[in-house]
Length: 392
Image (cartoon, rainbow, N blue to C red; front, top):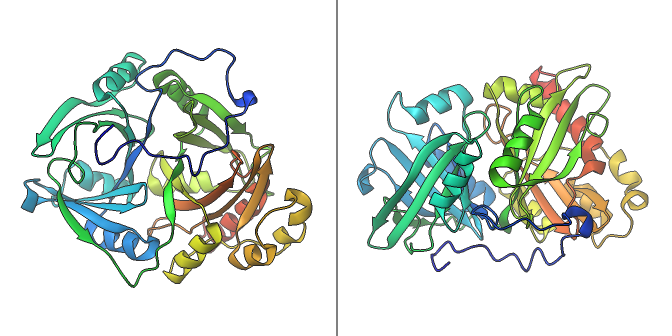
């Protein structure tokens, strides 16, 4: 792909081969959705200028492009933010009652579109709709002096959509209607965030299998791993989860649903405040989590706390690691190991007034896991925050 947003180069991060136990014996025939990658995530927010400023100063993004009335786009504004291979599109309505304004009124600031980079958007949309996906936008070609871009969208859980983006013949800053509008924030520390590792969706009671099957049928994804309420539970709360992945493990969608517990789980709290299913968190890769968390904390980002007791038996539980456990304890970074290696992770507090969307920062050292060994400590931390809000 020759466009400015060519398919991401992951060799520096994903050199570990996919193990035999995570592949099928027979390789399926390639389809329009076999070789895909993340393109961007679009947030619908109440005030795009302020939200863009927050993500730039707190998380180290640069503002790259802008669309709005000044560029011929009526009724809304959008800011494109970029950091390495990570792209966020921050969009707000200028009208009192349109799709964007209604989305924000119902859900608060949240993720509307998880856009997927494909080689052929029309073929991807046709494959998806034949498999039962509901069309949101039929394939449409837009062009300007920088070339042509083809996009089409389908619905997924809640009000979330996926847009298939074909930009092999486009060399502009982002898309027609956008102009270059670069702005950096020299006082904000650069954080070393690289690209999306996975996007997690929260769905209602009994809907996890339904949406897992959706990604299997529509995208051709397979189940990478699953967790039941025995894996993900504390004394008070529980949930179930399964992870759906493309064959190359570039695009991964964990799907969570509530499970019975003594008190209200984080999934139930999300569904209550978000008023339906939606994206709970975005996991973002880094190649140096210690440096990244130090920079984020210096920029004012707040993280969930982890009990000191978590670190007392950490060497026995995860074995030898490169990092100093005293530093991990200081920064409250979690560690988990699988057969392929280990991973380090930490979770921010919610990024807006409602306790809904947050980020996970993750570094993988061979591991393809999702932190099963950390669930107990993580849930205890989340429950403490729920208790403060009176929603546990």
